[in-house]
Amino acid sequence: MPRTVEFIFDFGSPNAYLAGKVLPAIAARTGAEVKLVPCLLGGIFKLTGNQPPMVAFGGVKGKLDYEALETRRFVQKHGLSAYRFNPHFPVNTLLIMRGLIAAQRAGAGDRYLDAVLAAMWEDGEKMDDPEVFVRVLDAAGLDGQTLLAATQDAEVKAELMANTEAAAARGVFGIPTFFVGEEMFFGKDRLAQVEEALQAIPA
Image 1 (cartoon, rainbow, N blue to C red):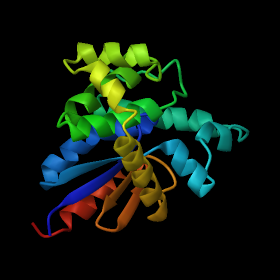
Image 2: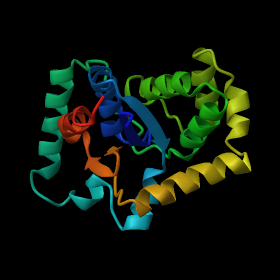
Image 3: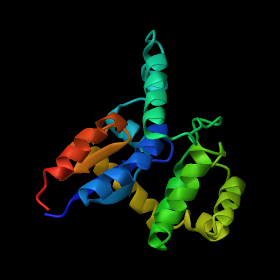
Image 4: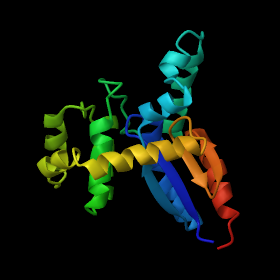
């Protein structure tokens, strides 16, 4: 059985950025393949009745402060000093998630992923602005205008919707979520368990 970890992903989650920076090392240590599955976090929330942490826990004394502390610990532990919380948060990710589908179809998924992750969570770009979208992708050596046009393709839209609905049907309620086989792990703090599950698969 091949070692594969499915990464249910949306650019809008800072924890997806942080997990995405750590996951490649886990894959290298375990000989696993990472399968990135673009989904809309907002769609998952609607399908499952979940809410963003700022809404769900905003009234809980100390909860969000502690989440911020855990983020600082994670950043320090993994040396992710480039991370910056996006000043435009929350960013509507419909455009950039459709763009990711389009880039994957064009064989440029990895380059697109790197460019948009950096723009969102290092450079503080407002990536739901089409002009910013084109500028960032052009600077990364991609064809921003072509990708912008592709976000309106019916098949691209349908694939993103289908991914989102399928994730919710599997029990996904938030991002980042990981699957090793049918075992589900939620949150960047479960990455050690993801690694253990991958190691348990015979090579």
